[in-house]
Image (cartoon, rainbow, N blue to C red; front, side, top):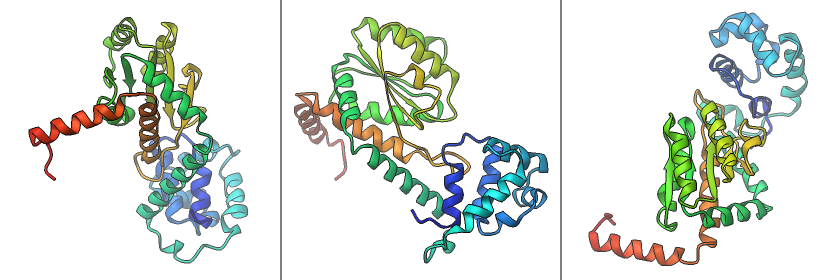
Length: 279
């Protein structure tokens, strides 16, 4: 990703858990990256369509004493490098894509050491059954993993609904022989997920977690946490890196399932016989 004003602002917000109002301010700042260091708090509030106190609270949430301190910081870092050719032509949607590309680069760097993923693959392959947990924003990640994992793993149990039965389902998996649980945990983090992981560990399950940060609230209840950042440039988070990390974990799990290839071939043969897919 280029290192122009918009990119430098994205780095300032990266990893911050912002409220919807604060995200709106950040979004407006990225759109007007070259002008923001020279705007007053009132002007920025008008640009974002929020109140002036919201701008002050936003600056404090970023770790500054107030908006003047944030503006001084922006004047130091935002204009420090000239934009690369074409960057000023990026619209807000392209900037979101560029931010996700950077998240994928970070994930690629993390995977230079394959040991954590390989360990996770062994834990997941050995667990029979294998519960896969993901609630709210993370439910689609859990569901996607469980869909593909079921093609190679003999017993995958998707836990994508909360409520009083969640602990019951974790208990049932443990009684059936589960030794590990895979969790996808993305912001905003439901308290229910944190409580479920604490309970899972209390009954002897090893917890493997894909989270947006190594400092996510679920970290203290995870035996093995592998981070994959989410994009925060749009109104709602984007999760390309967590999705890709889920597929990487699938690959590692397949490597530790000796009959994985045979199961895939059996599925393909059955699908062809049923005319399941249109080629």
